[in-house]
Image (tube, rainbow, N blue to C red; front, side):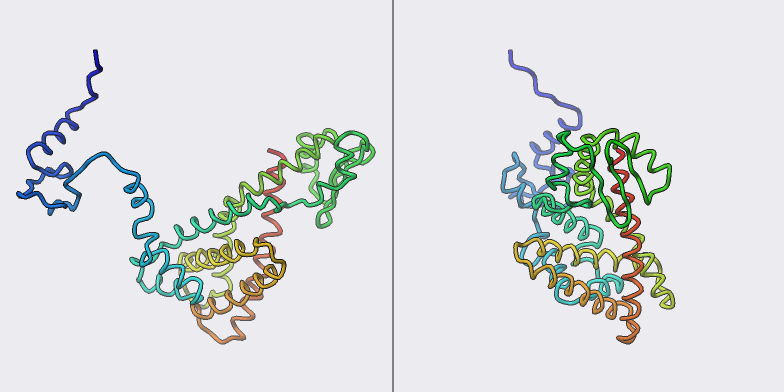
Length: 307
């Protein structure tokens, strides 16, 4: 005996509306001949099982069309530094991708590219022959030096210099019980850092916006307006970082030069002022951001090591 269809009062009401020539969404009467769309709510009147083409249209829609918001947004972002921020702050928002959505979309693409490339790591040199031998147990020494920090195992004795005592103790208890465990933890921490790149940048982003507010304090702009500029600026940087993963070495230097020049041009368009003011402000912003990176990235890596 075939199973009875799963129904509910709401579903039966929808089926009755369709049978009686009413809209299945708002139940408004439909004229005869039946139009393609309901005049009251705008939904299609001929509803059937969804097709693959409909799913593709729902996913892309105007977002990916040649005249859609994505392409208009990218055109402004890439070709007119700062103009996208200026138009958003002026109130023109309907025809462009919203700043946070744009940032998340481009950062997702960058994360995929980074993971596919597989050549990004906080601690480098883990494939050295001496460390490979140490991991197999033939050499009881594995010491890494990163920006004045020494961490590892030397002749079977735990070594930690340049970190607070509590952190050193935590590393010894969780990650450095022996050479093999320590090296395995380092590789795992590198992989976690790459996979959590988006989370690290999401923490840095509001801090960067705070740096922008400090540099341009005299402008009297609300913090959220600086945050919009930070979202757009990072979106452009991420596009450049994606291109820098192409297999052509000069792209690295071209990319960094492009990011620096774009930042100056975008800042002048958004904040105004003379070129010398922008240059001094950009220098101060760079120093503050480098300090934030110098604190946030090692801390995130240590957390990944101890996880």
